Amino acid sequence: MNYLKSFLPWIIFAIVSTQAGWQWSALVGLVLAGGLLTLERGRGKGWDTLFIEVSATAFFAGLSIWAFNDPGSPARDYVGALTDLWLALTAWGSILARHPFTLGIAKTMVSPEVTATAVFRRVNLVLTTVWAASFTVAGLAEAVLLHYAPHATAALVVLKVLGFAVPISFTVRYPRAVRARAQKAV
Image (tube, rainbow, N blue to C red; front, side, top):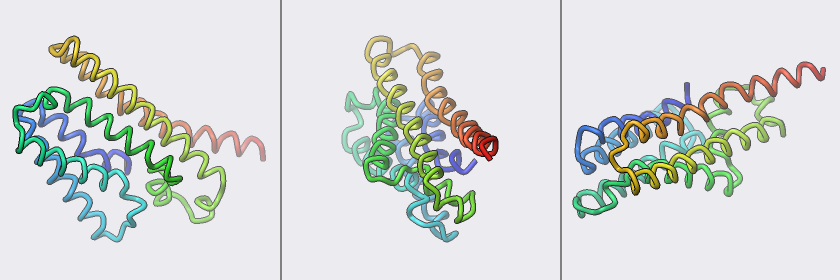
């Protein structure tokens, strides 16, 4: 569930953007992301556990500035795809930085002995790669759909939901499978 809380500003932004202009939904995303980041830092969480929150705050700050300065920008029609592509960039960037974003979150859920293992790092690299790939595919598919069939809202919703549902499901199942294999080997 820690993963879902990290993505809450993105999810609420997606919902609000269907009802409000992109300026206001960007501002809602910024307030939620900044608030969540402030709350979690106040609870003593380290920066390494807040990779998605920091990314969300930066994205929504930039999007808010852009949206209010150029409300008629053609980019407003692609903002749903841009959010997934930004998340993909965030996830791929965390892999390139050798600190997969799931690592910091997962460290809060297991013992220090587990976090020190190569298996733990490998599992989190795989998890972050799945998140990155899912966001990449969803973002690109949304961009193509928005370009060729901008009124296909049901398909856009399905892509958005799958972009989150697939990696969430994998995140729940994959570590269990790795643990089961390890226990069998012992």
